[in-house]
Structures are given as C-alpha cells and as structure tokens.
Image (cartoon, rainbow, N blue to C red; front, top):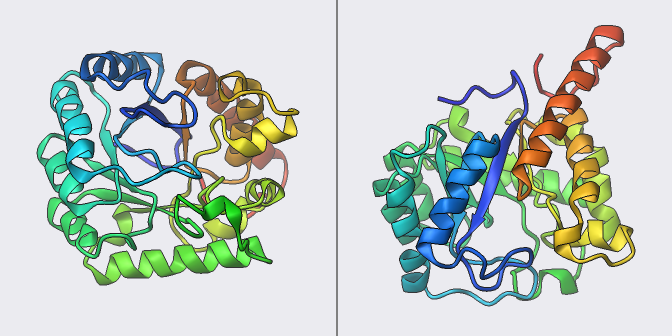
Length: 284
C-alpha cells in the first residue's frame, strides 16, 4: 500500500516498445522487460510502470493486439516477484482489463479517459488507482500546434475536467492522481512554466504526478543532447517538480533520481521548517 505525501515516490518506466523516444527496443523482449522491472525495483522504484505503446510526439497508434502481446506476459511474470505496485500505461479499456487481471493496480492514462469511453468503467470495476494526464492534441500531431496561449489555464481546466469525468464514472476521489503532461502538446518554454507553477495545479485537490524524464524540452535547453544523455537535466527538472509539490515523479534513471528525490525532500522539509510554506498540497 502506497502512502502519498510522506515523501516523493519514484515511478520507474519499463517501455515494452520498439519506438519510445528514450529507450525504444531495449526492452521489447518480455524477459528483458522483466529483468529491467526487477532492476528498477531494486534501484528504488516505488512503482513500476509497464507500457506497450509509445505515445511520444509523432508516434502512430499501436494495434491493440500488439500492445496486449507486449505487456501482459511482462505483468504476469513480475506479479509476485516485486513488492511494489505495478502500473499499466495504456489508454485502452481492453488492455487495462487484461492488465488488471495480470496484476496491475494502477492505470496510467495519457488521454485523461478521453480516448476510450470504456476505460473509466474498467478502472472503477477493478478499483484501480488512476493517473490522468493532460494531453493537447493527438500523439501524431501534438507538437505541431496549435499550442495554448495560457498553458496553466489550459492544463488546469483539462485536468479538472478529467477528474470530474473519473468521479462521475464512480472512481473514488482518493484513487485519482493528475499529471500535467510535460512534453505532450506544449512548447518547450511551457514545460518549464508548468514545473515552476506546479503548486497552482495542486489547488485542484488531487495528488500530482510529473514525468519530465529525458524529454525534449530538457534536450533543447542543453543544446540538443540525445535522450540518454539528459540525466543531469532530468535531475534538475525532478528537483523543481518536488519543490513545487509533486507527489510522484516518473523517471527512467531510477537509482539516480531516487537520490535526487530524497535530497529534494530534505530540502523541502527544511524550507517548510524555516518559512511559511507555499500552497503545494503536499505534506501539509
């Protein structure tokens, strides 16, 4: 059982895909993905997130049968071998249904329950915790615009609507988390604005999940370094997210970011002891 708020939780990413922007193809084989999931848990992951469809900018939809073939064997093999919860990263009800039967306890949905009208019912029936992410546009075109003029207004309104949709479907409020969707239909500067003003989203009253790991806005700020060389930039983004109220950070480099999270948590605690805290919605 996870407790949100005592410290920042680290969600480790297992991409069982051929085309993810950061590590596509490395863990496409089920045994490789299982080994990686075990390694992430040993490295300090509090949650292991399994995904079989890349939703990176410019990606094309993966056939549902392919997504199922990728993720279900991995979930089944990891179930019982890990002491941390398993999450399924999908926007499809049929995949979420099968994943829940294979041991997933969390649904990480990049569509905010918009892409599949049956997804919310699956989450409710299986009592899954849900992460609802903001996405502007579709994966195929989301970085081509049009972009929001006021990104905070756009993201806040979208996340509030997703949360209402979830609650209207019968998902308990206590099982809902919100993700601003760093890199999903935002200009590079808008991602930095979201991190800087994350506390404004916490005012919605739900725990906040942030996934900045290795993303394009970091590469752009660093002069175009490739995804697998963005760990230091990711560390800065993770620190900013934590200091501004993130409850969960979703990352690829778990061992390194677990250390970052622990130090950032200590910093935040010291800040709260010495000053009037900002309204982050986290740890009181």
